[in-house]
Image (cartoon, rainbow, N blue to C red; front, side):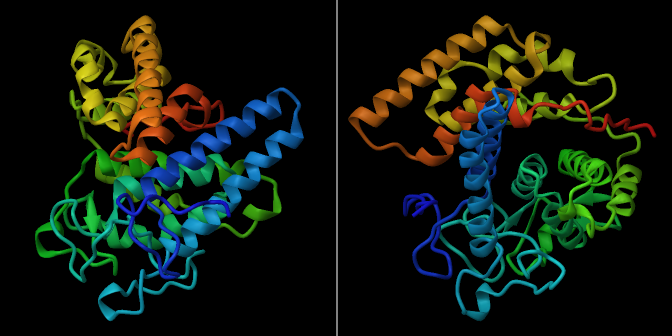
Length: 339
């Protein structure tokens, strides 16, 4: 029965009328399973490691079948066909409850979010699904990249077209994270000797396009907890870690316990803090938040329902496993924005 559908208030139905998937949650699920598998491999427990490797494989297959396909046969739900993509279509849907042909300019209706797809690409790279990640990356970048203004659109409709107000996109952190995950996939492709990556095409052209778009770009810094955590996580891939000092200066705001009102956002900050370490926030502070979060989730499980339960718990799991699959690795690229 794995994976069970997500709760009906957290993800829309897939084409089979049974499965419910949400791309962000599943990306962190793959990262969590990969982290656990690697822990068992370090301890030379291959049997237990393989349980989590198989879980990764099954979850990835299910996501590609569900979110890589239209949610129904209705023409308004159609996705652009691409035989070169492992899903058979361009990109991956978010998995929202509601959908319409032209997505909204906010976050109510289904569509494709770049900042969800880039998390999925990182998850594919870390779990060893490099070939699939590269083909998805090559397939969907043209739909998201605004060649006229040099940036990645944050959102397009499920059919990969951009609504009028979302067509223009300049350099942004979405563009920057795109460069990071494309570079990780390309480094894995070059380094890998396994058969699964033999026929994967190079991402060098796409990487050069993104590098050119980002020349002179100054990475942003925010005290929004989730944004702050992701910035801390990705800053490790940039030469000189240019945001570290600014991130550290506002860590009190980003890591404030009041953010437990929307737990996954605080858990995102905690992930970034645990990956970046003492350079951005005191370990003792993060450890106290982890204890608080565990008590909070335990109380919710015992006494009631929780909005966003799946995304909350999977992000807390990734936090507990940090650095795990979200930390920078020896073979990962370090990127200069001035080159």
